[in-house]
Image 1 (cartoon, rainbow, N blue to C red):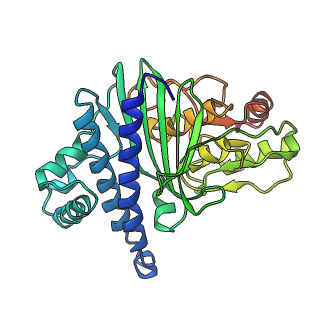
Image 2 (tube, rainbow, N blue to C red):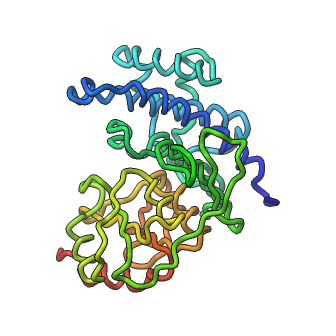
Length: 328
């Protein structure tokens, strides 16, 4: 693949793989007892550890690039966060990133940018925290944005099935060079291209939406699906794995419909997956058909909701969404 972002792609893939191994180790230790106690500490530790190892590598390879990430190290620097910090420190060392407590905090804080710049990365170290805790779907999302355009998007999906293989998918796209997937935990196997579905009949659509109704308006989605006469049960999963499902044709539509007026989507919740769908042949806009604007800092401030489709059904889906828009 001869493009101008070879170094960035190699570094990003290495960083996401490293973070995925760390997250998989933490997730494997989650017990039913900790879930019963609603103990979120495993995902907290994995969040910090994932961001630390990724930002460590990005800072070393591209020191001038800001990173807009979800986490900051303020909590780790408190006395209450000392136990978390020690766990993160140990995890980083086990996964090829040894350092001091100050090093780890510094790596996490490297993802603390919030303002738009001509070139920056955006990172969600664990997208889908409840899916992570349930040992279901979650994703590690990383994207490079240059002059407001996503040039590179990477998703690590440790629990997604690779076709013909086991769990773990590493998917990526470079603008103009297609979308690809490879087993996440075996980089020796060749990458294969992914393409969106060819479904064009609305009744045959598979809709993909969030498990949590707090993330997307399920009632609105249901009315939209009803107007389209969709017959199939929605595919519900956590995280940007939904974008991968659309990109490789397992779903035809991903709806992220606003649950309250004025809510601004965070860029790290979408950037990695958006380019996958676009480069796989699909289309991604907000609910009004506007392209997503990644020039507004840490949020999609000029957009409302997100709609990703296989491309063929995008106009009809947008019309159905608008006709069923809740009042107010």
